[in-house]
Image (cartoon, rainbow, N blue to C red; front, side, top):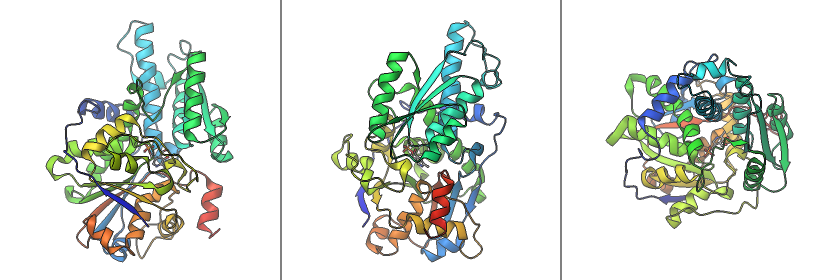
Length: 388
Ligand SMILES: Cc1ncc(COP(=O)(O)O)c(C=O)c1O
C-alpha cells in the first residue's frame, strides 16, 4: 500500500542552492559534448487512458550518452568542472574550456589526478566515463548488493572497483576515508555537512533534462503533475528547482516517489528535518536504495515539493513490461527498475482511488514521468521482461 505525506511547501526561492547561472552553465557545456543529443520525450496516450489520466509524458533516459541513465549528465559534468577549477589554479589560467579538458589537451597535467565515488551503479558509470574522457584515474566504491555486471560496466571504462561490506551508506563512508588518506577528489551525487560544492554541479547537470523537455512539450504545454523518483533526492531537488524557475506560479504539482524500504525523503518530510532510515531489505529499484538524504536536495524539496510518497516493488516489473510492450499505439520503451518508479505509483493508484484523488490526479491530468534508466543491467532486465 503506497504511503503519502502531503507537504506544506512555502515555494521559497532556491537560488541559495541552485540558480539560473548554474542551470545555464551546465546546459551550455553539455550541449557541446561530442556525443550529445537530446533524449526523447514520449507521449503515452493509450497508457494514460488506461490509468484514467489525460496524458502521460515520459522523458526517456535509456540511451543518454550510451550510458543508459540520466546520471550520465551529472557525474561527468562535475568531473569536468572540478578539473577546470583545478587547472585554472594550477596554471593560473581562467580561459580553459570544458572542451579543452574533454579533448585531453591537459592530460599530462592531470595524469596523477584521481576522482572517487560511492555508487549503486549509475552515478559511478557517469563519473568513470567522465574520468575516461578527461584522461584521469577513477576509484569506484560499490556495496555487495550491487550486481557484478554494473561493476564490469564501470571497469570497462577504466575505473578501479572496490567492494564494500554493507549498503550504499557504508560504501560512502569508506570512500570518504580513502579519499582523505590518498588525497583523491570525491565526486559524490549526494551532499552532506561540509560537502555541497560538487553535488551542486552534479545536480545542475541533471537539469539538462528539464531544459530539453521544455522545448519538447507540444504547444508549450505545462504538465499538471511531475512524478519523480527519489534516492538521496539530488535528482528530485534539481528538477524541482528548475521546474520552479521555468514555470513559476504555474509550476506542476511536484510528487516524489521512493521505495518503501528506503523512504528517507518521505520520513524526513514527516519529521520536518533530515531523517536517516536503515535499509533492512534491498528494493528492486537499486538506484533508489538510499537511507540518507542529500542535504542540498532536501533543502530544495522541503520547501518546494508538494507530496512525498513511497511504494512497494509490487508494480515495478509490470511497469517495465507495459513500457517494453507498448500499450496500443504507444511507443515501446526500454526502462529499468529505478526508471519506472513513477509509473509503478500510477499503477498502484488504480486500486487506491482515495490516494489518486488526494494527489489531484484525474482524467484531465497531464503527468510528466522521468524514465531515468534503461536496461542498466541487461541480464536482470531480460529476466524481468521475459517473466522471470
Ligand atoms: C536510475 C536512477 N533513477 C533515479 C535515481 C535517484 O537519484 P537521486 O539519488 O539523486 O535521488 C538514481 C540514483 O542513483 C538512479 O540511478
